[in-house]
Image 1 (cartoon, rainbow, N blue to C red):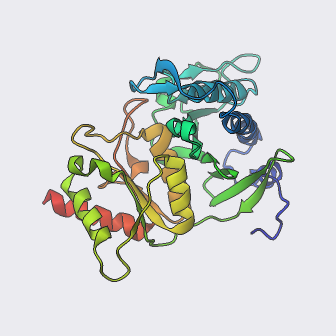
Image 2: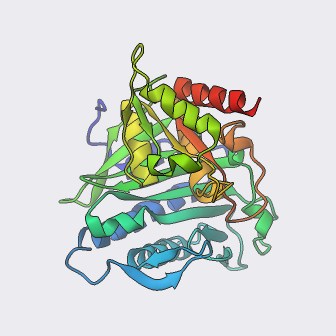
Length: 337
């Protein structure tokens, strides 16, 4: 716990403002907008069992996946919160086909930042009361402020993120984020509606004993992944490892960062590029993981160095404790030879 357990997220953001390379207060306001939206989504998630907001919305998103009612609600909540504070010039959401241009300021388009967001990751778990989350990623635009935002403002390598984080709506609600100066977690006190610093300087252990993968797809995995799973199950040294898979990226990542472990969503014979999205899920989680001493790759190369070519691009994903990821990469390379 922190030496100052009563430090709020708002106070922390202000205290750390000088960590931002281009500190103008705008990024602080942007993070505050995300904080506000997360509280509204948290309220809706927690009343899902007594309100008509669970189940499918009857629509599909750009990936052809059924949208849940809470997907749609969370998407609208975050877009509204970010749009009304004049802190972003554009938003790209996993739930929308294209990016959204935001006009702000007297001359419009004046903000320097764009946000990419997965409003409710793991939302199909809502019906069965399993933890879900929000994932966000923030970049400085590459086009000139004062002009309309363009696609290239969003198609940036993960190394150019200025902030990223997630909200986990679980037994407690937490915001975990980084601005490139370590990772810190804040827990919501529901009685006060305030986030307090509860997990300062979060770090992955170098190795762990948990591997998280949907083993039901084993027959469809690349040979390197199959070999790594067998390695995890082998009784030798500190193995076998424990298999833990929730099916909600935020929840699986959060557990592994606290306890030590690896999360894998590989390519399959049916999904040769995997299913996770580079811009909305993999880049922000990779930024967090590296800031917490972990590692992320697609099995062969660093996630943050991948050049995006489209908004909804998918990539295989290996993320977690550095020694575990490197061992998985070793099996992937050996299977290629």
